[in-house]
Amino acid sequence: MIIDIIDLSDEQFADLNAVQMAMVRAAQAEKNDILAAAEKEKGELFKELLTNGTARSTYFEARSIAIDEEAEAKVEVVKDDLLYQIAYDLDAGDGNEQGPYRYPENPNYNLSASQRFLVVRSYYMDITSDAEARLEAYAMDSLARTYLGEYYATLYDLLASYI
Image (cartoon, rainbow, N blue to C red; front, side, top):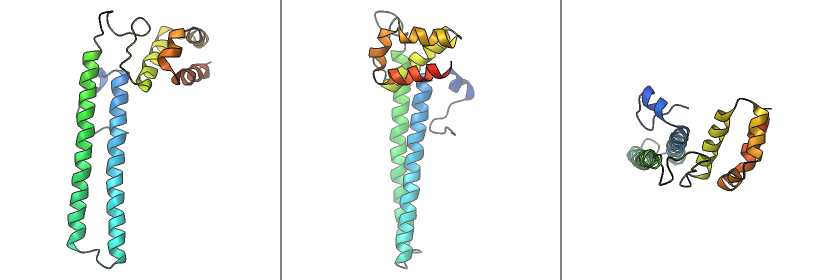
């Protein structure tokens, strides 16, 4: 996936954590969907005008420009939201009165379910290279069951696949 929703150098991308990269990828996918929908709308408009024999009219040009402007406005909203989320994550990444956010010592409940999944997965992937020990430790983790909710079983299956 080519990431062009925000302009960051390679060093800045390397500094992003797993949660922030997930945010960037989700925003990029949303941008791609918006632009694809705009192209599809223009294609359908052209086909409709072609059927009516008016495909080379100025209406198509004007409507195409309007569709592109609407799509760019939507992309700008997604971009602004992404920048806000990254800035918020940087602020929230410091922690709270219990110290820095770190799973399992001080989990961050402000994260979405998919972001929690990434944090817990990273934690278990970093604690040991022994796949069986990792799975056994995860299976005994009662905090992960409540913290991850429906993603608990997904992460269990992923960790089990490494055995």
